[in-house]
Image 1: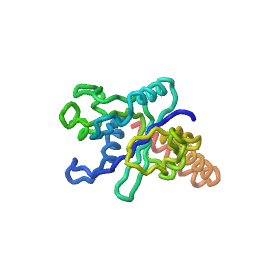
Image 2 (image 1 turned 90 degrees about the vertical axis):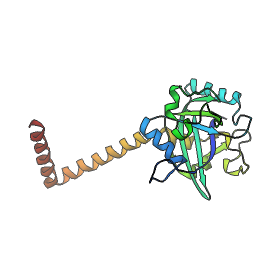
Image 3 (image 1 turned 180 degrees about the vertical axis):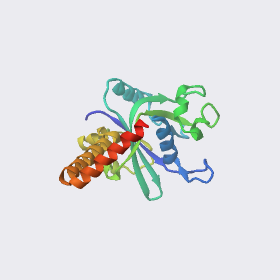
Image 4 (image 1 turned 45 degrees about the horizontal axis):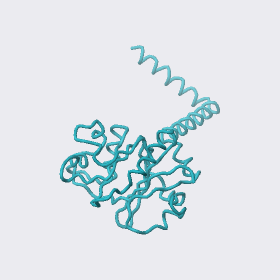
Length: 220
């Protein structure tokens, strides 16, 4: 079946955190990741039992330690609107393992981290992520449940946590990071620019003059 991955269904709720700004669950988590290049997602639940068994948490940790790329997917819903996000996992922390004075608390959105260690602490587990990006909702078609190999889209019950498998096509999409995509765009842009200069002497001359002016500015 290949490596296992984590799939979470979450309500994308409006949050009253920043005066004058529209913010929701996803945007606040994105803000933390963009500021710190790391995100710890706390999965909350009012259930007394673990949303993800300790045995399965260990499975993920062992897989990560073996260097196998392991991903968490977040299906964020608001009414009929759905968005899909993915992040590469670096760890899972069990309930109670992150305290008020833990270094990890700095990577949890403040509206969540403020609950840790209080009577409002209802986190079942935490997922540590080194990436967090929106992907096409159509990628749900590349995800199957580990337990029965059925499409994730066919599962309609109220569960919010699933162990899944992904196909090679989605794996390839995830392994090509946003920074790599940006480099590809930059290289192709440079190629086009170079071709235009070679085919257009006037364009080449303007570019040459611009570069000379910049050299003089730096010299000053």
